[in-house]
Length: 369
Image (tube, rainbow, N blue to C red; front, side):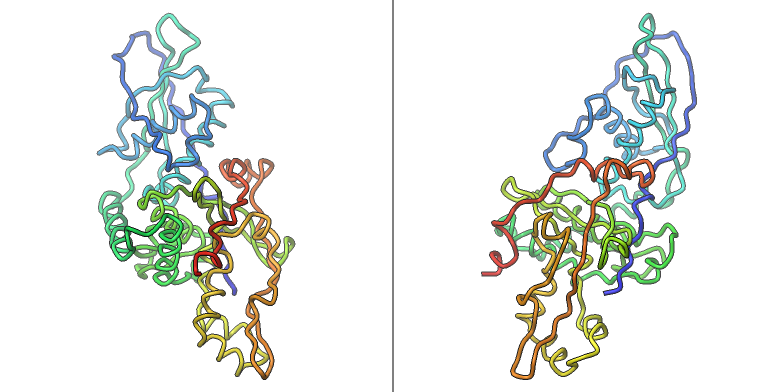
């Protein structure tokens, strides 16, 4: 396959500080707390960072996000490098946790914040957040995304186990979405990088058209709505580490164990597979007409371990064999996660916190039996 993913650098927020020192004690205000067990990244933030995260979430969901939201109280100096680093982590966590806020990563607006010291307590700061400008059609497009997700999930049997449900959602998603090769060849912001692109349309209006992060955010959003915990992983992937390009995929938690899933790479079409194979054309065509075999191809990176996806080497399980010979459509590949050392450059502070996937109970071979 020739799927060139887009870097995760779009996850970095620009932060503009507007400083206001005041000496009046404001009325106590609260920010909604979120601890539902579904949103993975928030749980890995420090306590004060969770307050920032919740304030950013409340701001984005408000009727007018360009107006200052409720104040939060923190001990970090908002003028410090420590605060700016925490803000970047919180913004990154928010985007990773909330695919429905797709417009944050493709819009041009930036979060602004104002702060003041608490009266008679110069160790405490009161901070408010707002967006510099509103995103056009935010409410309309968020409703379209929600409706599209509900429509897809309506076709999933609600009585399935979580593992079977995650498989059914994966299959419905890759059957729906077309990979956006044109957007993948550019570095432009486009809805193809979002759950909206995958479930509704990209910025050109092409229905269900996305690149890797669009697939990943859509899969996460659908799993969240089905009550299944997951997160997005960013890094590089390709035939080798030297030739790998920026990519994103998913981690899914089932019965307390984590599994890696790459819905983008699993979306193998017959045409794409046949184009990649010059030899044994008659066998290749026969293979791609064989549902038993194509099911293997379209799930080869479904519910695998981190060890398996990090250095994938296809064995005979992925060969199609008949009395005239054999054919395979898969080659060696690597998936390498971003690390702490990458964070300043990529803006990805969450992937290094993601767990290692070691689950094997719900691998595809077991679920299809």
